[in-house]
Image (cartoon, rainbow, N blue to C red; front, side, top):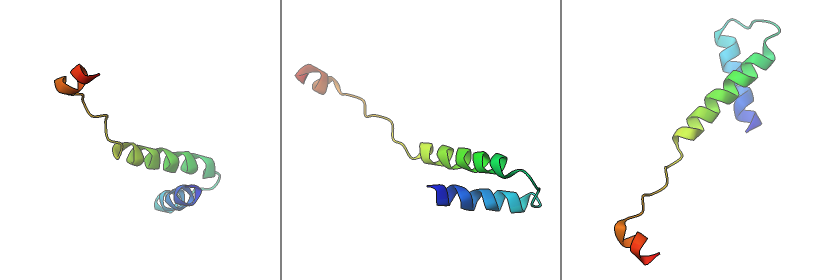
Length: 56
């Protein structure tokens, strides 16, 4: 996961003109972006049907 964060942070840093002293800010920005993307792939739990509730 660190490799993905590092790669994304570098891309963001380059896109902003390579500002000095902002490594931590870009690391956290990249981590946040990647976490948000990963969260979109999580499926919500299935709803239990009435039939399944009766069986329980």
